[in-house]
Image (cartoon, rainbow, N blue to C red; front, side, top):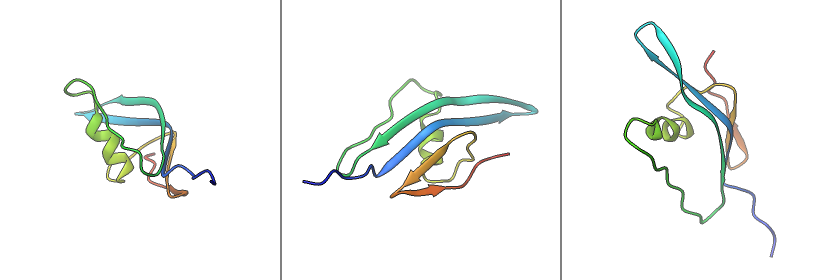
Length: 80
């Protein structure tokens, strides 16, 4: 049986959040791969940016210093 390529690959995800004039890292250096037919969940306490990570995969959340690929297509939604 041939090995399947990962469905989603995320490398060194960094999400910068803004609060007023202040910018701060909300997610730093998160990497993972999701293979076909695998289930993927994010868990953690309230306000630990789980939703921001999922929005980055969507891609509804700007990201920085990383790449996310879905079906080998690299998403280009980096923030400056």
